[in-house]
Image 1 (spheres, rainbow, N blue to C red):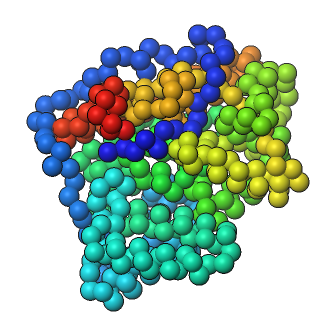
Image 2: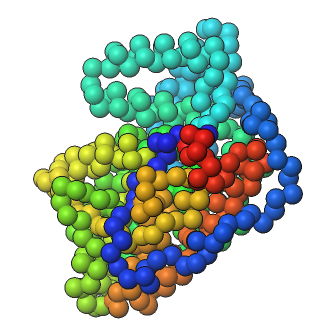
Image 3: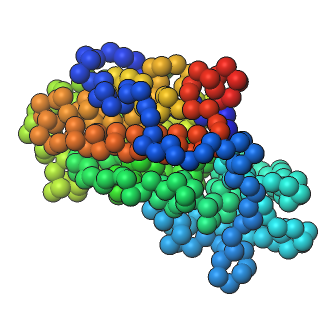
Length: 392
């Protein structure tokens, strides 16, 4: 089941013309292509599974190859492997196996009880608040990695039997734009996460994952921002303390020649960097505060330019509830910014509408797979029914 906290961060005020809304295919009466599987009872959901060991049989630290297959570009976080080592030591000491299951691949059983005591004790010994924060993030990610080995596809983050990779068509993103998916650890490897679609479609260099609280990831992202300069960094977030600009306000004053010069590969390939905060509404405020703190360290002021988008309800609204119909998912926010940039004369020749359509197609594929999976498990797929049962 999805918690009510799975409401997404990135959707904003409707303020542009209807031409900016998503194409009708995001609003169809959705039916999956194949419903031949028999509907099973909720008891048939995935059973608990033990952590998969590596070839040496000794508890599997994360290798660089494995780490990057999940969509990451950074070195393996040292603290993540330290947590995995601690988990393996505990497993040996109490003679119990790590068992994962349920939503998010969480630890279960007696091992969870013992591990919970141990990690809380270690957390209390960390005097530095930043170390505590990093430890929290590393533990979340380490458990998700171990619980997902051999169970989830490393590219689409879906169970192997539901892998959607063959149905996603890759596309090239215009070199003048780069997306940074700033993801909360609780959304890492989440099956219904839509931020992952961006690097599935555009590749990890054009749409880069940055995990909140992982220093190796955050260092890469902020080094890129400092190199590009503050004027080239925009956060897709409704910052209520400082009125966000629309895409039109932010970029329409530039001439076509200015835009081409700004995005030229001869200008050290410094694109416009768009940060998509990929977390729940309850987590997004802390994530945005961290962005502002890092901005102050980088540029001496914590105000970071924010953009308000003219999004409508995304396809995922049919399956995953939002606090209101004018809020949307991470992929839909990326679709919206591409569509709005396409309307600017200076950007109209870069095929951004086709690039937006490629993400939209991938979003529909994800919705179809998740819907089919829910039907197979006997779970509700309609927003109204799920709310009437207090299932979110």
